[in-house]
Length: 355
Image 1 (cartoon, rainbow, N blue to C red):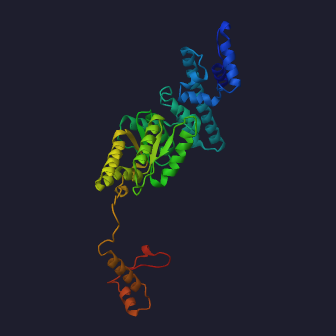
Image 2 (cartoon, rainbow, N blue to C red):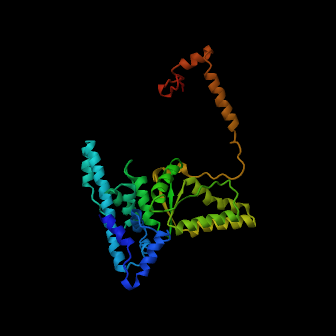
Image 3 (cartoon, helix red, strand yellow):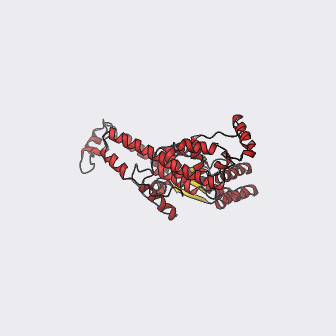
């Protein structure tokens, strides 16, 4: 099979007969577990990092490496096709004609040579990138700052976000993914499973931040180190809106303290935000960008609202009087249609409220 042939070609060492000690040395190194043995997962890893091929077999020529990489791409396409055939068979067994027909009509529209990591993602996740998903991602990549909309269940989080991370995280910018607080754990766990704990080996970071935390220079140094490592390893950063806004506005709070230490901390926090080139990707952008998610950044000790206690007590007294059914005068007032209106929409647990 093609898989066995690729493994054999990568594992073998072709050297002249008068220089066969290289072959002996390499084989002895493999027996001693000094040199790695080639496995089929290494074929997918080569699709992610082509330089790995030279590590597995440093005796290959440039022409041989090109031929092997072409064979690996073809093998990955066959693996994706095998998964597709299995899906078609499952639709036939379930007599799901609409899904069977839709699966047959899908055609890959993106060049696999330019997006090898997408192809590995397909094989690893046993899925296929749909034409509308590719067109959606291409439009977002070609038009920075744009917003796209898809219906529920069309793969925004499961397919499109990993595609964007794999394409944009190239070691230059930090891809920062914004999730709603309720979806942050779910999104992080999915990306960790299919991008980190896989042959793709992309690091996934979280940056929770609370403005009540007292920062010092050591904390900021750790933060700078994490962001720098995230960029170098081509990872991505998962945050909730309040985490990013709290970190961003913490510098303003420190600046208000007006002392030497706080000014230095504020300057370093601003430098982190300004010096790092972030690529912000918003999941559920319609919700995250709603005005109710704007951070109300209160500073200082909380105080009661003006007249708040008196207003709250007045409302409680009114409700207590209305709920007293033993008062005949109250009953006459509540039954007067000129004063009260009964509305069944506010009936809760057998209690109706009049207005």
